[in-house]
Image (cartoon, rainbow, N blue to C red; front, side):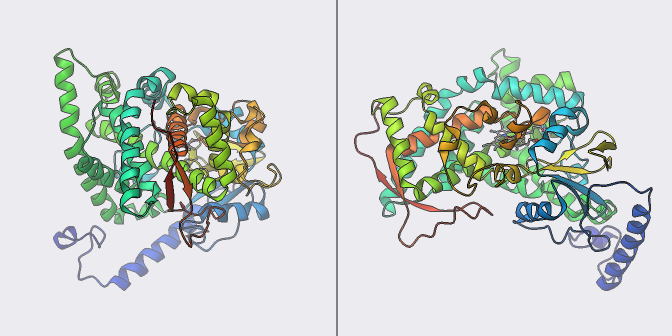
Length: 506
Ligand code: HEM
């Protein structure tokens, strides 16, 4: 036992001299027995379900970076509402806007929860906005996030942070271009800028580049560790998840070390009557009102930083990759920017007048939604849905990408064509609040769990894209392949940039 505790490899309770084969056999036999017991429970009338192998179901087939595509393929065979057995749980997959509307809007009361993922208990529990179960706790922390970070007036109040970080972004790109034969790697610059703005939003302070890199490394780790684990599908394996538990605790310790001194600074200012009134401040106030634990605060800060960085940076990268592939679209966007600004550096207040810019960003989000099937929903109770039973512990996926790239809905869905968003169709305002048709385009989700960061994210995406397209012409590098039609992972592209003449002054 003592030996086992010193290693991450072996499950709790086994000594390292125990033959691995025996342990594996025992685990498999116990799993099969439990799986049999589990599935001999009263028969449910589930949506159509592909066949899978004992215990694992279709889990092994659907793993990996192409999961979202595999799920679209299943829909061709099993229809727009089907179930996938994954370990001892079911994923319910929805790929049509009409059915998504029935779940997310018409039956919101039932479909607006999150699944009780055991892996999250190894971290801070179901205590962040995105992981909290539907109920008063979720309502309280979400309301605070909206009021303090993402409401229109708050987003506007962060304009000075954006200006500071955008100036640094342009300097960084200039510097890399000068030193690398005009070739830049785009994504890290966008991530750095968006992340720095979000740090400002949380802490009201600018960090030095080394600290930003270090914080970013920890939060990247957080994203990896919070991905669903095998214990979420085969819960009794929790007994053997010591490695994951340890990793979570180590990460929490690192976050504690980085964030606690900053949170304490805020507490001191608050006691002195000089609060910064930023997200951290609001969490300090909320701590008393809602009984937040120290780890809840760490998790809530981490959620804004991780939730807002890669999503926005990936949107920018994909959109830019498509602009590079279609120079005529890039040129038209440049002309719109120049027309609205009169050739001076684009200002935030001018973005609302740039309809083509907005259409370009929408098209980027349609073709390459950063979260292809959103965040998994849970149901508050076992329910009947479209004539089928949805088990209480099911995980429900509303497949955003399937709906946004459905050839029966969108003409030439694989073609990057911002024009499709130029006719001011209110169905496509990304809120999903205009009937079933509006769920054809929901990159931020829809209903009660819709992304609270939408305003903030769009402000970042519009401003960064406008400033970049105004200042540089983006072209492909020699021998570069275009992979923008294959959206399995970010294009990870280098771009060749050339400074446009006469731009850069206010
Ligand atoms: C282009 C950028 C972004 C995209 C495409 C995006 C997309 C999404 C999607 C699809 C969901 C799941 C909705 C659902 O469960 O049905 C979501 C949830 C969420 N997003 Fe975003 N997001 C973006 C930026 C942001 C930003 C900047 C923030 C932070 C301020 C943020 C914070 C959250 C949170 C906290 C949730 C969970 C909401 C809840 O469970 O109530 N997101 N996002």
